[in-house]
Image 1 (cartoon, rainbow, N blue to C red):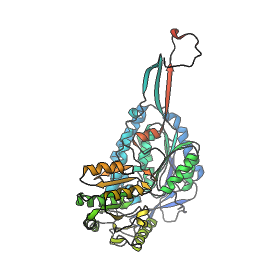
Image 2 (cartoon, rainbow, N blue to C red):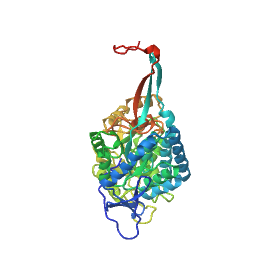
Image 3 (cartoon, rainbow, N blue to C red):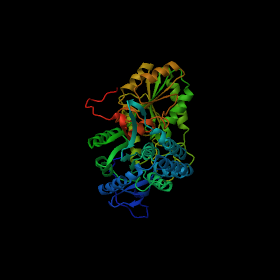
Image 4 (cartoon, helix red, strand yellow):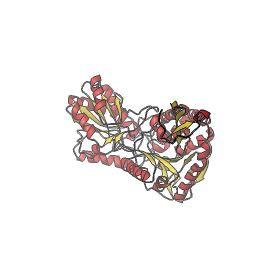
Length: 512
């Protein structure tokens, strides 16, 4: 996915560039550390805002605000909590285009993709509106004579969320609607590259009637991250990002006694069998490989062509890729820029390396005519063929619009290839053979699987998460696993005595 620990602090420059704030205790809180990061428009390369980087003390202020708000929010009835959540849902539905425009301006993805991101996040809000049902416990009457037993789930307290740049709205919404509906309070640390969506959401929560301190935002770098990881008042951490950072988050958070769900990187494969509809497979390879400029943890970056279909399939994908229009996401383009200049250079460097190592560059996105003003951070759709599994374009998560074609002779080779990969986030198979598809979903060692579906992101009432180095921790995001992550279980055994139970009995109680 992406690092959130980049050390990019600067001091503000002259020229009237707006300064953003934190959001602490229900109001905007200007940054006090004196260090800032630049927020750029990826389509033009221009600095549009400065974002404050929180000091350790500012992180503690946000945590303290969340801690102070917790008892009152925990004790607010479920019906009142869900009323506020429903109000937030309605406000978000009405104003979703505003949020999509903010995302495009800072991330670069085209407006339709940004709107889709907001819609997928809203699905989790809607799921969380059912929290009264999701928190229902179980009960057994007369488990022992005159003894009843029931179970309940209760909130943790202050929870921390550390989110990546590629989904400024959707990924935080995987976590905070469930956490808040369950009675927790939240401190969100968004990516410093795309901070405005989180602050916009905080304002929306206030408009929906959320009490002050229940939802807080601290912007920043590693100082802010470490502040959340080490604070004894933060009970859990939810993270999405690159695998090295996910491992750091998991190890540091658990060492400080926290629950951690840390979703890491990916190298997602799509297997195309000889019996597949090759036009469908080519269309979906384009959608999954180049949507959001490949900056998705569920992007298909490795296409595994089985048998003698590879030449035909590559030709079909190349034809479609050459027809895509790349440029400013606010224009009529199919694909926008990468998020930063560093990302552009990194992706182009991987294509350079693949070419040196012997891959065939079928479609080259390093140069082209891009529909944008200024010096945006563009790499067009790039298709590499004859990619070997020892090449860096295959082994590494590129996080850009680069689709690598790996050729194998058999279905078994394709499955072995996927299972040998250290990542296990998502995969797909394209086939018209139901038996092969059923076998694939049973044998492949990956957390999320698509059958003729290229980006198998589950609906909100299922849980999102991978296997192997794509997940650190035992709990996936949203769905019932998300509810369990943000709550703790209690079992209560009760007996109300009446006169018939009088008398002493020192023997160990039994189920008689």
